[in-house]
Length: 179
Image (spheres, rainbow, N blue to C red):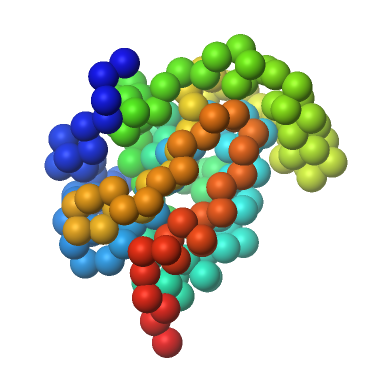
């Protein structure tokens, strides 16, 4: 796979309401979260984590933008379920922005290895995030990027599907706290 071409992807990425990610990042840092498909327990866990941390993201002056592989209408139903109504998002069913950011398809070990089974049981059964119908590419790996002034300033690229990034810490490393 070719190396990531962040600049090209950022120049083309628009939120559901038509705003260019690159332009947003020139006003405030963008926490750009590439999700797995909505049926994935780890995607649902990520939405729950982001919902719980949204106030901290806002306090840091960041803008949360979610990238997903579904239609805007389906995405907004999931976002509402996790109290993320109104969050900016980018629909990317063909995964071209995922590829532009260097996010690959997962291997069997990354998706179905022991770590994923253990974490999947924890997130899906114990924590109640469940498992749903595959709404997107079930092999696509997720990732998180902090974009500031049109450039990637920090990132977390998942090595395993069940990893849990420290979203606020990623953003905080690039921000000043607004009081």
